[in-house]
Image (cartoon, helix red, strand yellow):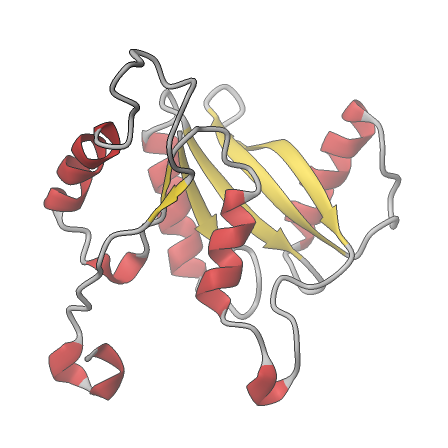
Length: 179
């Protein structure tokens, strides 16, 4: 499965063009195991809150107003031509903790938000400044095979849980942040 963790999806701090691009991607790959995970919080678009409330009404559990923030996993529903909620994990605290200069790092929080919904034995975290190079997509399956125990033919006995590869930031020439 591929989980696209989008921290500002449907939120005023985000970019509506990015939200549209994510929807187009989800619609194009609706037949595949591609999921969107986003942060539901104060300020998130009312239609996303409604979508979550509809899901909870059908599945039971939490009532309207019982929580102020949650992590939400969605998939594109081809028949309805819209997002369909798969899972909701209410949270006591915001995704990013702290205040001012002492706030937790957004990228790490967002990856953790997606990781909560991961169901596989192996997880590879990629982020958008890895250049979307096709080589990233080719190397991941081959590298993951190296972590399979030699005496096993299936993936029931992994020797690792979370992998990361070195990352080259392509914006190095644009400023010191990318170096």
